[in-house]
Image (cartoon, rainbow, N blue to C red; front, side, top):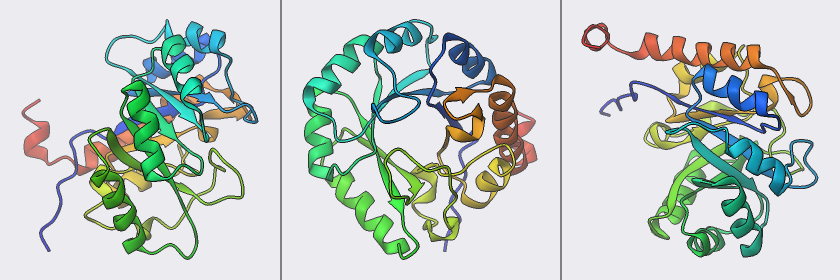
Length: 235
């Protein structure tokens, strides 16, 4: 089998930001995207006014991602306007068809969370990605998270060996990531992007700027180890 090249830089999404200082810390850490949660039961949920305040602080070329669980079109329209969203993240029971219809209603691309169960097989991930991809151009990627009996992620790691080698370079890896395992995760999985929320908090719903920067540094450490010396020398 031909080896699949790892992108020269793993993209980083820092999710569940709730305070203006979180945006400053995330961008200082070098985040490619920030995640804003629009799911009332979550301790990281934002009102439209709070989301608007945070979105106004996001610099150019940093994506603003809205996380939703079984939203209505009106939910998406209001959040898109308030937070100037550039990408949707569906974390509920939405089918691929529903994801495409919802995304089309606001003309935004989306990523779909797939919560990996203990009995999930590599073929299941490939099939689901294929179904999503066949639905239209607004589908961007699968976000792989750990199955828990709740929505929005549970801060637990799943078996990374379940991710097929041919799928890994285009997935967003999530689920229990932290500074302690980020380097290993990138080295082992080689995903397109990583997504972290609870792993950069000092308590539930309260972000920690030092942890954000340490997490990003751990990802970059893996990137450096995966980048050929010849490529490093041409930068």
